[in-house]
Length: 160
Ligand SMILES: CC(C)(COP(=O)(O)OP(=O)(O)OC[C@H]1O[C@@H](n2cnc3c(N)ncnc32)[C@H](O)[C@@H]1OP(=O)(O)O)[C@@H](O)C(=O)NCCC(=O)NCCS
Image (cartoon, rainbow, N blue to C red; front, side, top):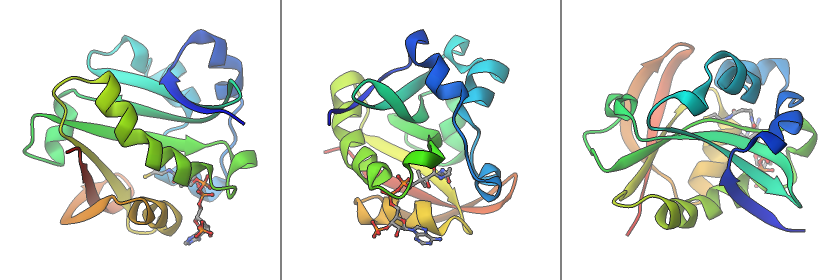
């Protein structure tokens, strides 16, 4: 089984638009369909749609964002924001989200020059996501921001 993080390319489109998330998870993230088809993130400056693949099949999706949006979470201009993370529901609970979060710092260091911190936010109610972030070394900054679905913890991972 080969797990990879790689930039989104259209060959993954079929896997991604068929992603399913449980109804109660939809409040916590934008789906790949929303990101690619509605928001058209790949056309937006500073936003990098990214795929987590298992043997070249997309099992996870997220956006890495170096635009000004991150400044709502941090004062660090050299940070990168992880957003819209999801693992397709049929692949959830198998440890893939945990593996992805462990691989992410290395990927960011390899691909983005001059970035020294990953930042992200997670809804208070999203215990599952919070657990994998904390288990993989992402640190709660203690900062809280108000999101569309209520308060969110701000976490970070310094890239040293
Ligand atoms: C959050 C998400 C990415 C995790 O991916 P995953 O592949 O299922 O994660 P893993 O299998 O690596 O780990 C899940 C862990 O959460 C635990 N877990 C499951 N449900 C849980 C719950 N309700 N509360 C707390 N922990 C829970 C599991 O026991 C497991 O921990 P363990 O490894 O110690 O047993 C995935 O569930 C997802 O896509 N959720 C919907 C979108 C979302 O919330 N994105 C994050 C936005 S910040």
